[in-house]
Length: 392
Image (cartoon, rainbow, N blue to C red; front, side, top):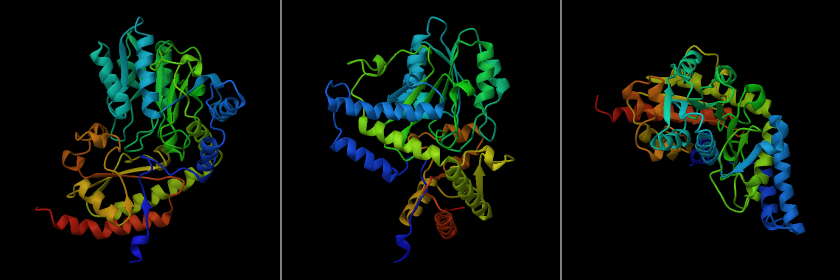
């Protein structure tokens, strides 16, 4: 069967395939330059050099200093460190935190933990396109507020927040409030200069931009008060102990450099795929594309499309597509461990009966128009058939 050979991996918000150059660099670090970066001999110094190189690549792109970059095990650890470490370090100034209803679980869960410890958390609503209202944020600020956490790009619907405006509101109210941004779906696709946008803390993950899994970083503005969460041998100036993941860090550097160098080409290609997919979905019966109504496409993220398919359960459609070699996601890959339905979809007002009929398609530098066409063709064939099984 020729058809089975075609594959459309459209789940890049969950993870991406590493660039070949990333793999090559990582193999070299694992096989040849395998020293412990804390060791005093040349093998250790060689390993340390990889860490320094990646820091320089990132610092140059973010227009910050190398000292403002802390390597972590990925986005979840970066978010936890920023939130728990930031809340803890500033607890004498107050115990109030502001976030949104559409954050990733790795922001909501640490905040739930902080609530148990007596911190107050305000969850800002969003409009039908997932955007936070600046005036709502302004109203929520109090004398007690020490931390605000708002994502750059939402991982389920691709909403883009106006980070600059939001951070200005926070800092003009009180410059000491830490403004944290989960940029896990944004870094690489957008050129982010934290100081220009008023970002104090920013989380990034390697495997969303063709780097390896299990590595990321936290940008921490110089002088931002944050307590470390991990103690031990004092690596990374004591801020994040534990032997650094040198192969991962080296791979992250290669991925970031390649992605940022080719950013405009990649982003243009992703928007082309997004436009093509949305046009194809809108032709289908009883299909709604979420989070894009009345917005120019370029004001939404280039790589994420969320669509609801009335009358079909997302799990059923997801597995039917997977059998045809089309890989998509239902809700967030990380929240599929939690059976409760997406907070993001509820927050933007998706009808209750569609919450469980929503799929997410996400693109990378590898995604082609041919793959989008193939996915659409499978949907055209599968939808009427799957809907027939459902009792009206």
